[in-house]
Length: 94
Image (cartoon, rainbow, N blue to C red):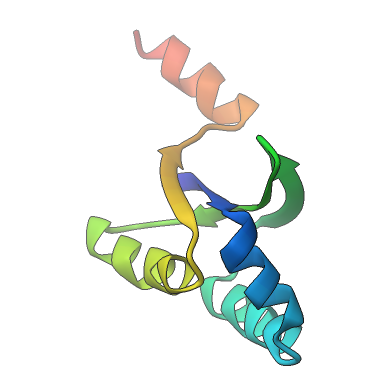
């Protein structure tokens, strides 16, 4: 099932992250591990934020995806999402 992993990182934690010379390497390793369909980076409510679209087959995969983000000081939301084809199939089965 497709999920949006949305993070918000408070300024203090974000400042530490971007000053870590290995941060981009760590982020790239994280992205390679979770294999997102898409990755986005943006400000949300004045905080550094990241969003990843990932496929999660089982609920027990969520901690492995979210824990590193928590360690970076992020607030993490795990939100089920659909693309248009999913929506069409769902509405046909109502």
